[in-house]
Length: 449
Image (cartoon, rainbow, N blue to C red; front, top):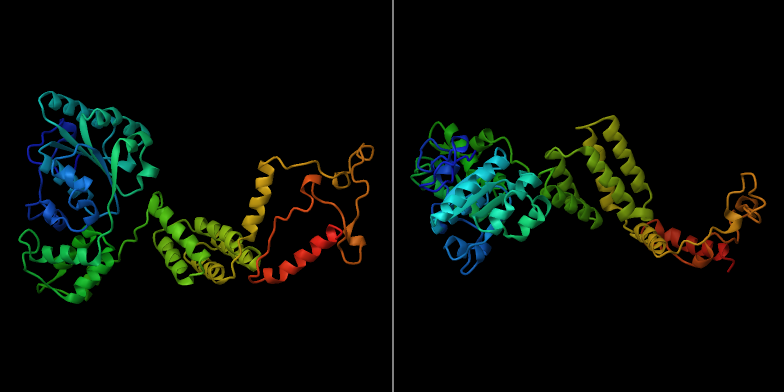
């Protein structure tokens, strides 16, 4: 069922099951974010990179384009507004579906209606909100209609379409990425709403500090900023909105992080790169962001254990011990107390000397295996414990290192074709500064040089 908030005038109901409701932007009882939705392209705030002269989206909205569009970006950046403006500016009929409630039946119903309209010379814009929530089957149901331009599809998603939209639909659509609104953009949205007759109509005095606070907690989301303003105004007894009132009316800024979407991957990627880059403060920021958003602490602990070997390795072998200990605390104690152990491991890894020698070492060895360099195990290293092993020559001539005073002696360990191959190259960072000379000495002894 369409929520009807952005349906163009004249849109007809497809059936009683998903009747389209007319716009409510002029309804004084509608939410402030709905009342203040831009009515023209000139009222749209932000997204200059998509709305500049000659840009694909502007051409579509001005009626000179006919491509289906995937609008991808964070919440509250104007995806639904742009879809509505596109329909109104081009004069096409507008149908809206939400992936939260619509199924294949509803999609096919709209397509059938669009096909009938097309025979009468009318084109239909089909807007699908949160298209990433559609299953592969539901998305596949759109393909023929999009390819044959029975409908002009305008789909909105907060998740990277590369992860959430099927490839055939991606290839048939123009993917446009919207950006979070800047602080100045949000300020403009709020000041308009304070003064506009559709909004607060100048009936409230909002202090500069309160405005700054709302901008800060909005996080680039226009809808969130207007919701916070409206909640604060409704709580005002004297027509004044100050910081204290905003803080009392709005619990906290919602952390933009979707555990199932690309925001999840973006934040964990930034966390990993901050650890690798030794920026402990940035690492703690992303850790706090994950914890605040309810990320599974076991996932964070697993990443820390991986990073301890991948980014630090032998430059500080105790980093892995700290990460494993943090994972045990997560398992045995749980949250919220376990966040301290995760923080400790984060600080340890971020501030530790870094070495990629562990990764490079196993990478080089695996590359040789893939290249077929996996010769026979030298006879003296083979298992000699089973009956008949001695007749095969297994374990014959093996030298036991502990019988030597130094605990190390000359002996061939790799297959013949890999004798003399070096995989591990210690850095001069941290503990590897001590390991390096030892590795060189060991190689010289073992290889009899």
